[in-house]
Each structure stands twice: as C-alpha cells, then as structure tokens.
Length: 210
Image (cartoon, helix red, strand yellow):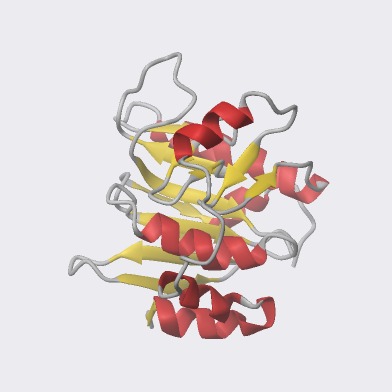
C-alpha cells in the first residue's frame, strides 16, 4: 500500500518531520535574506569542508559511521555492476546535485545525462539514495523528500537504514503523484526508471544487521 507524502511524514513524527511540511507554506519575509545558490557555491569553495545548503542554512558534511561507509560502498558497487552497458551512470557523494532550493551531496545517485567532465554538479539525477542516520533523519525523510520530489528529473528516492536492513522508498507514479513505500529486509528494490531490480540485501552485504 502506498501513501501520499503528507500521510508518509506522519509515520516519522518522532523525528520532528511533520513540521517540515509547514516550511512550504510559511512566510519567509521576516528572515534575513539567504544566499543565492551561486553565492553559496562561491562561499563553499573557500571552506575546508563540503557543505549542503537548503536555501536558508548551510550544513557541514562531516564523517559518518563504519556501517554508513560499508553500505555506501556496497550501494555504489552494486549500481556500477548492474548498470554496466546501460545508458545510466551511478555516482557517490563526491558530486553535488542542484535542487530548486539549494545544493545536496547524496550518498549515491544515478543519472542518464552526460555532463562536463570538469563539472562539480551532476545533471539530472533520476534515482537518488541517502543512508539514514539519527542526526540527519529529519532532513533525509523530510525536507530532502520535498526537494527531490520537486526536481523534474527525479523519479525515485531511496532512504536506506543503517541500523537494520530496510528502506523507505519514494517514487513518482504514472499520474505524477509522489508516494512512499516501506521495503523490508527480504525486499527486491525495483527501479524501472533505470532498468534494474536489486535485492535490498545487496546493500548490506558483509554487515551483521537484523
């Protein structure tokens, strides 16, 4: 059974995610004028750490856990193997993507658009992956879900758990609605947008997780 975005966020009220939906409707007139995306990119070049930007606030990209790193390696390796010979290219978190609101560094994503080899922003992601952690859950399951939904090229967004083998999967239906599903440990993750289907267990290979 699929759920609309507003129904889906109700499942994660303990992360404070339900409040995220109010951001789309609030009046920002009283707040200081935020940086433009171009101003942010110029600012980031002067920083030692990479940063994400949601159009209002910047967030430093710091180190993660061993589980996060292992899942990310499994994820990018599996995508590379299964997409070989197809007109799609997977990338890890080294590259930025540009949303309508700001700049993000997804843990992995797939694009079918060739870009400039010197570019630091990848064009037109089709499927995006994030690996959930407690400190970023409110973004990954809240504001990023809205940002990625609003990108015309994005057809699917997968949020992988790092404490157990499961995922929250958001995708665009043929009618254009953005809906969510839960994928359990034994699920096969169908991604018709890029022509593959992968057992969720591939992303957790070598990890003793429930």
